[in-house]
Image 1 (cartoon, rainbow, N blue to C red):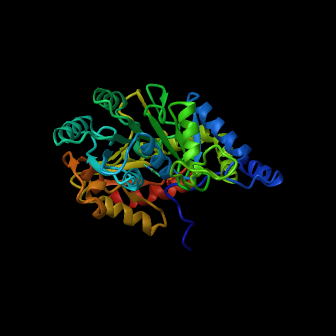
Image 2: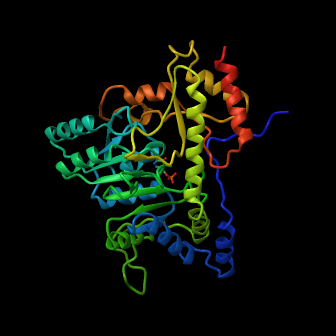
Image 3: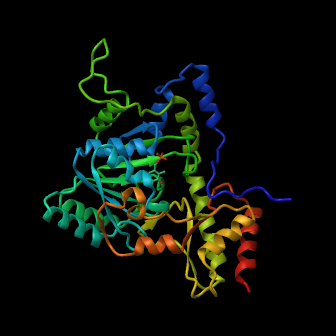
Length: 379
Ligand SMILES: *Cc1c(COP(=O)(O)O)cnc(C)c1O
């Protein structure tokens, strides 16, 4: 009699997606170009303050092409927030460069200004100025935008803004994805909007967008035959996927409101229990899409109940939850990379849990979540 699984974050269609996909079939635009690709790019661009946007096959591909266009190459170093998903760091290695990891601050959980500057000055002293900075708005929470960009400007290092989790989030009223030299978006299956798989690069100019599309379509020179002066990639978004994206854009703001309601639900729920705090905005400058809601557990104040106890209790009730990202500098694959910081990211990983956050959760789901917490904590 087990009940249906409650997912952390599952796709939530708005209704118009199939109309756009059917249009693609009806007009035979079954290709990585077509009216949906252009339409989706226009929708994203309009949403993001008219910045040029190139639709790509994934957020990872967008990061790769952003770093490439920042001039990252063999033997270079790139600074990267350690507390993130591996896709923020992997593309650095695709280019033959090495990540240098930086710890988080404990307000937004994102890259620490203090350790960012320490990393930059130390790498310069060691003879290598970092070629780029990958800063991430984790779980939809904007990083300390003013502080981070002041440092990046001071040392004239471009920022690749990993906004894969933060479409619709804003800082001081301005959209995440528009602060960096390049901004990265993802439409993977579990993100705030999905195209089943896909991504986009927010570009600094029309020319940079043109170059991004050029690189993403095998870098063909302007000639009747296939002529190549550059290494290209096959990174363009399919016209079918883009059709799903156009439908999703129609419900983005509505779905953000629903995710934010989930966050409010958790704030109210955990207010009743000592030792558990819900991750939320520090002040009005920050507006998070609350892609995922997350909690921090202090076992000294919960009578010994740990984040793992909560995760297992949820699992038993067929409810998905997940520890926060394991920091990159602690991953086996990156263990030899430099790290600047202390143990903020590690502590978040150790005590933090992402809880079901989907825009499609209903009140019956919330009651099930509430009951698990009640049974575990009100003893
Ligand atoms: C999802 C994600 C990516 C990668 O996006 P894909 O579309 O899955 O390739 C990059 N960075 C972060 C922080 C992400 O959450």
